[in-house]
Image 1 (tube, helix red, strand yellow):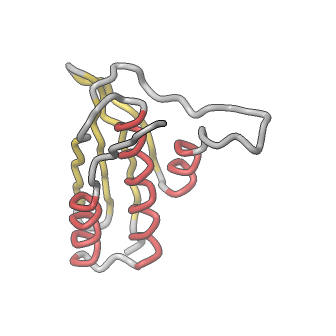
Image 2 (cartoon, one colour):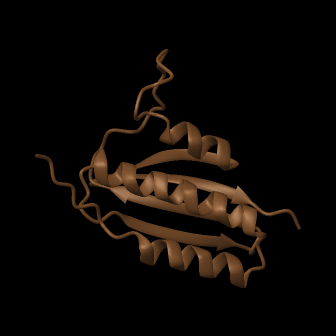
Length: 122
């Protein structure tokens, strides 16, 4: 038997949704941002060893969104490459890369931030 207790990311999702709605972002971009946030949040919990990852949402001049998720692991993420199209995991970072304009990771004193940026056309 295996039990999982994933952290609740609904507050981060709601804050993101509210910020983008208030800034007038299109629904499609907001959904892309939510999905990318979910991927980074789950990765921080599952692979980064953080029971409650920290999320920072910043709107730069209301046209660029930057979302950072921190975890406690110093290991910087690398998208997996696999020849098996039926693997059950390993596609999250590829998904983040395809949904966003920029994506990366930055080390910090006790772990790292994994981030993405998404631009909204004026």
